[in-house]
Image (cartoon, rainbow over all chains, first blue to last red; front, top):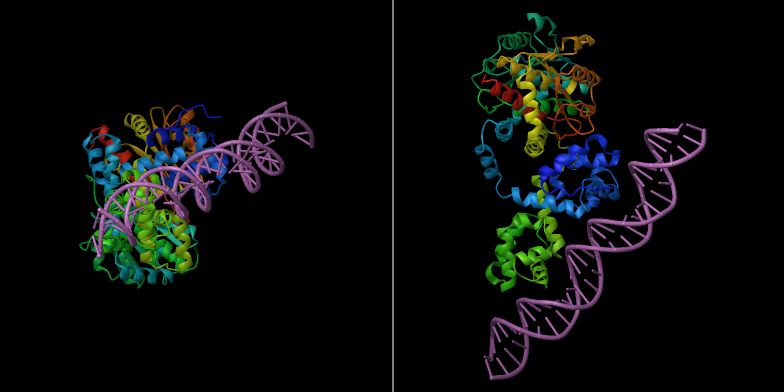
Length: 272
Length: 272
DNA sequence: ACAAAAATAGAATTTATATTCCATTTGAAA
DNA sequence: TTTCAAATGGAATATAAATTCTATTTTTGT
């Protein structure tokens, strides 16, 4: 049974979805998850298509619509179509107005970071050097153990790289730098190093990279500019420029480039 | 009679429209004008709606479609919907086709991840719940020490949050989960917890969140869907849906939401 | 001005899609 | 385990939309 009125706005829609929370049965939850993940598809699809994509029966999708308070799919789709027409023509204007109404609310801040992240990603597609990536892949695909070094602000990138390698059963070691231990002795012939550092450049990372190079290991450098000390090393140089918001950055582009590299290694080893 | 084949791309469509030029009769030209001025409407409207908007009869609109080489309106709409889908791709479908084509060069993979990231960020601006963010901010701004818990794939997010807090001199502890130690005893009155977990949900994170809640600490949950066990807890629920590329994701949206939260806390404490 | 051709409007029909119904399965409580 | 309610899948039906048809109007050429 339904009882509640149909959501009139997307905000109301998402709110209703949150209210239902985990009280939804399995199939209906599949619908909810699919719709939250692909709201853009709703406006241009039929129930049959959406149901198939969400891996449920059309009737289940109908029940989902009704559970949310709509009379049926058509009414729900209408909401999505109206929203689509509203936002499509002027995304920039919408963002601008979002910024204008107070820049110190969390929502406004979020808009800033999102915008910065989108621009950084846009940049990445243009600046990423395919040759350098091929070279990096060549180094990593045949490596025995892959060492990953990244401290401070790049530590999340290093840890995510290591996690992804682990998930694909690629032998990898995360150099945590805990206790200032010298991990240099762990670098063995046939290994490779991924060194990640941004300004201000961490000395440990640079030293580790130099140590690796001097022992003849393949080095992949993930850094932010040509001025980086890592560019002095003979290595596959991957440059990422990340747009700052104030003194902060989202790491979106860096994370994206990193995981691309990791997955490419997995693919080249037939592990994916 | 038509004779010509249907345009397969939007470029071909517009070219055909130019070719027909002003040789079109009155009503058909009205259609052409309307479609050129409002291409975005075609994907989400019916013939009747478009005809009314262009101030012609539905049958006139049909003739317009056929004049352009389409079998009817449905075929033309399909072109517009496909074009829309290219801007907002269905990632699961695209990944499947990508694998079939075997185009797994690093650059192609990068493009996939970039688009997934951009789309996730776009989603984030719509799904992020301002009320939940305010609630989260309320909890965190007055907290004594902020505990951050996130393991496996969310560990990078947790570590970046902690790094950012540190940088702003906000007391924060990263729960590393190393050695399966019970960090629960570190939760003191007046503290708050940020718990981050994605499917498959890590037991430690959920347990820690439950422990924190039972001691009356403020909890901020950063999770991926309503199916998450964290939604059972009375906490500020921040939902992020991150688009996967295969079994992988870039974490762009999650990182963005996380740093937004951190910086908002810094702002509220006048530390930025 | 007239005939012929083209274009149009609206109704009639066909097709696609949404929606409902009900038999079966699943899951929870006793 | 047994019982009952909830959930589900798939077929059946209703609804809405696309498409075609034809009588009527408008335009064009002579």
